[in-house]
Image 1: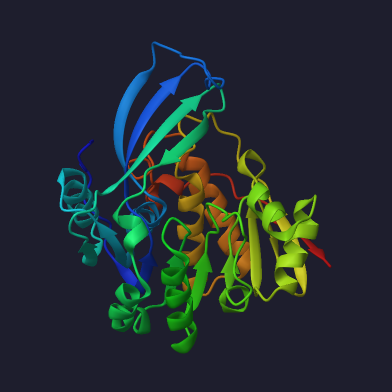
Image 2 (image 1 turned 90 degrees about the horizontal axis):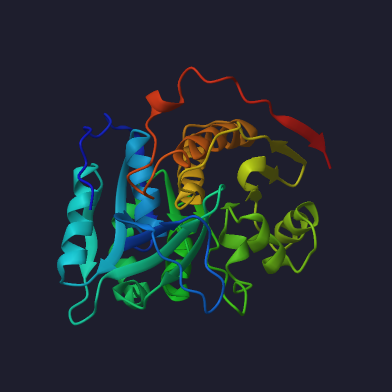
Length: 321
């Protein structure tokens, strides 16, 4: 796994808390993605720190935010190295707990084609043993935070516990609904979500709609306060109860798209914690994700503020509903 060579950013602002997964990403880059039943040779193999939760924690730390990670790992080399990697980035890992007898998370990733599209398989692991009680034990962290981020690579009871604690303490709850459960999200979760951050496919699958705008409107109707849909190379679409708009992405040559959505969610949450308007926070998150895809590794490729400086200002397209 690549070592962290740059020093962590000086931390600023109140702490954000990420409740989620940690994986070790085993990545094979090919000229194209294989078809079912097909074997392709000649690919380049790399190993990186990953997992949607840990990715978001590193993205926040590199953005200069104080961040704590709540998650689970095994007592094995993968888990120990994952914890050390987060700590080296400046992430508080006191609640990154060990689940004895279970393996740490591992993801098998294929990257292929000019756009570096990805296929990902995630093994069952300690991530799947994180409980609501584990999250409750971290309640003091969440209570003192500026916001809480979660994803769906951990059990739903743990996600619900994080959402309820955030609401109880008046903290913003940002949810990346990936991977989308076959049964969808519990109806009780939507009203607890301040900002829902799906990609286009996830938004339409959750909402049962055939276009992004209709999907976002339906997700708002279910109780979310804001919906921000990532659109890959086309940027991001945002909607609130009173307005919507789209932020285009700068044109870049992608190297590795894994972790781009996690980068986006982290920078979005950081911007909102700083008091930015939603459209401004989305613009910053789009730029950060665009930088990330030009770099290899979900965590290793996360940008720092200096990486975003000097770029052309992104236009924000606003439209009334």
